Amino acid sequence: MSLASVARMEEKFLLPTYERNRVLFTRGQGMYLWDAQGKKYLDFLSGIGVNALGYGDRAIQKVIQRQSKQLIHVSNLFFHPYQAELAQRLTKISGLDRAFFCNSGTEAWEGALKLARGLAHVENHNGHGPKWRILALENSFHGRTFGALATTGQSKYREPFAPLVPGVSFVKFNDVQDLKKQFDSSICAVGLETIQGEGGIRPLSPEFLHTARELTRTSGALLILDEIQCGLGRTGKHFAFQHYGIEPDVVAVAKPLAAGLPLGAILTTNRVATAMHPGLHGTTFGGGPLACAVAIEFLKASEKLLPQVRQTGTYFHMQLEQLAAKYSVVREVRGMGLMLGMELQSPDVARAVVLQLLEEGIIINRTNETVLRFLPPYIVQEKHIDRLVRSLHSALTRHRHPIETREVRKTRSTS
Image 1 (cartoon, rainbow, N blue to C red):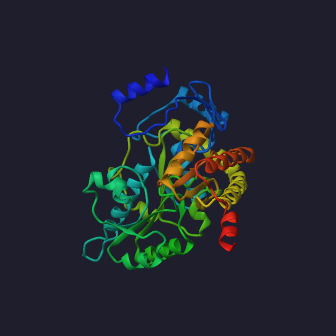
Image 2: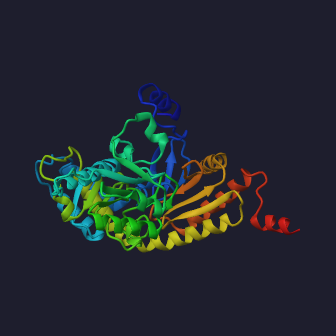
Image 3: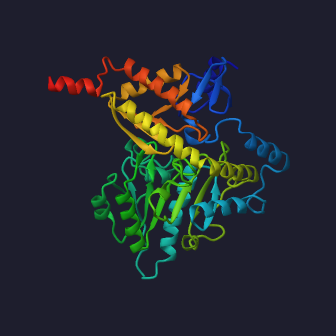
């Protein structure tokens, strides 16, 4: 089918939830995608962090072929061979004790919020009402279901669906004093993205995260981390929180876990697990044999790629910093490993840069209006980064008339 015919059908039959780019992709291999016209694209977005092994990975294909012939789905009323092994692997690399499998990141976050409220009921021994309030962060994004929206600190997502789940308050990003001010005995959980993704690639400061950990540990509240985008190898460690030297109570993961198949997970401690018993939570499709078998293979592969992620991530960050030093339109480069963002001064320039790169056959996207987001597959090489940086240089030059280098501005200011 042609792009035009697909677009017409979507306009007629689909809910209008996406503003799609006018590209119809038909296949992928390694770092590249091809559209219906045969044009080749270098992918620095990887399906918004999902295709961490790139496209057409042979080991993943073999697992899909083998398992699809044996068993795709069996209900969670019965055992299959892969859930327990996948849970064992995830708990080993995270330092947590137990796992629950679902279909997506937003479902993992919903389940994490239920754990927090459920544990507060279980541990309520003083005769008063259980803790029930949740602190989240301004500018955060946790998903599009009602609990996730309630903890998402961006009004553009929340307001069209209000009223949402009650009991959520928002702390200023990385503001330790505001966190301390808002934290009290009614709080059952503090829920944070270790690195805000949709909010513009903004890592938590060590002081802020350590303060959140100390407050929750002292009070008995839970520290819940959303690592749906930044977890599972994206930052060069298995989890972004491992860069901070802290241990959370609950972690939500998803995106790359099953190499493109839908799969999310909640990882938690034995203490938190006491909040659950059969019937309180569940899923029809989550943790099926096909997705779990693929996820096991993904974890094996990503383990081997962690040194490469750290090396190429450092190189990538350095190249972006050097580019940023030349252009006044660039405000900041942020991120860890292969989760990087370049904030520009203008939403219009950011939009134009994304579109020019797409025209040149390079896929990135714009988030939080002004931030260019880079989430390449873990297999990215320096030659791919060099091509991207060359195109960024051209785009920034073209869409800033004129773009002055910082050296030129300095010279003018002193002349």
